[in-house]
Image 1 (cartoon, one colour):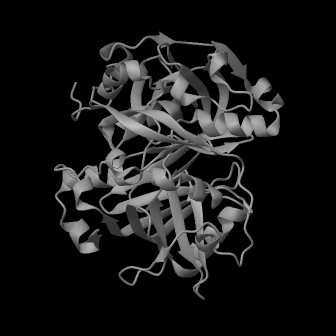
Image 2 (tube, rainbow over the protein chains, first blue to last red; image 1 turned 60 degrees about the horizontal axis):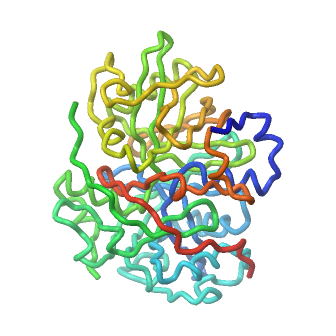
Length: 203
Length: 203
């Protein structure tokens, strides 16, 4: 095995290091985050950092890098308090990835990338109509990472929309059956196949 | 599509809700975190919450739930300042899952679950010898989530160990080739296959 130490990491070319560390953390979730400002101008952006925070009450988090693109999502969430997570299905990975391009503030990625906005049950943020699993969230709290100015944004899940057939008897949502993809790094989208489902482990 | 609202979420049976929300966030990374206390007693635990925080300097985070098992990992990190991430390879998912069992404080999951401890380059925490991709980290900062007492733990990557052949020309680590798995929820382990690798997106 090759040993890469702190010195070698520092000496890596910048894009090389970004690719290396964006992939080496392991596989990631694949969601489109939908928002709108208070005038109703919408925004849609791919995020690979949605994580589970808790089930009762249901909290999910995501990491916001200090970049222009992601800031539109952040500003809208802070402005309205609401947002949506929409699973990326394998049939639209190319369009989903395109939402990561640096569109101007006045351009909606829904339109630019050809996704259909959908408003459901008075939730003040748009869902992606094409998505097989959609969640409506309300902002709860945020944490600024001092080391590099990224932000952990945490929200409470108020609504979930999905085909009933995707939910197994024990409450598990079958993501493989849903066609939800996983992401490696910043550019690669993958499908999954089940190896094994274990039980609750005991010593 | 079925609509599950806040009322329905509250009324879910507790394990059902846990399974639902642990799966609905999307696919997760699969790592074993290795630690030791200052007397050298080791601990190993499966975590599905390792996330990318930044590449320069390289920071990775993980979420610690307020449970007994995960607390051993936390106590050791706070005691020594060092820990390791070790990718879970598809050949040892059963043993890896077994580390989630509630072993007593004085039991090392390395021994109980049949993993080999490995110390490399003076790093004060044990690696998993069997793992194809290993990272040595130093604690950097933590954030307590007020909503439910989970903790985001962030560390700086000091060392990386992997087969050179897994690193592509642009710095990407090929996780599928490495045999690294992904996790859905708390119990299911999956392998991946590449759909597409895109370029940096432009408007």
